[in-house]
Length: 159
Image (cartoon, rainbow, N blue to C red; front, side):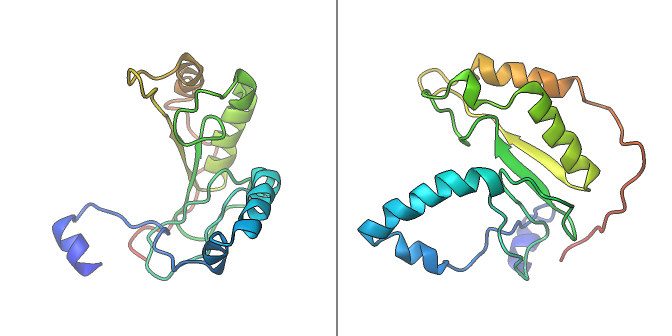
C-alpha cells in the first residue's frame, strides 16, 4: 500500500482486503446457496460479521456484531439503522433499531474502544433520507459531544 499512501497520505485501509473464502465458491452451488442464505439469516443476525484479522489493515470492521469485549487495535463497528446498508422500502418500523438499542450499541462500542459507524440509505426515487432514519439520527445527535467517564487506551499508527 506504499503507493496508495503516497497518493492519499490521509487515507486508511480497513480489513476488507481478504482472499476469497471457500464459502464464496460454495455460493455457486445452487442447492448449497439456499442453505447458506438461511443460515446467514438465522445465525448472522445473532452474531454479525467479524472478518478475520489481515496483516495489512489499519483497523477492523465488524458488522452488526455484538462483541463481548473490544478488539485489539483500532476497530469500527459498522451497521445500518435497519437490517440493510441501503434504503429498503420493505422495512417496517419494527425492522429499525429502537432508541435504547441504537444508543446502547453506540455506547457499548465506544466503551469497548471502538468507533460506531451507522450507514444511512437515501431513497432511490428522490434521494431523501427516510423519516425513520432521520428520527434515529436525531437520537444519536442528542449524544453528540458527550464524553466517556474515563479515557480509553488506544494504539495509533499504521498496522
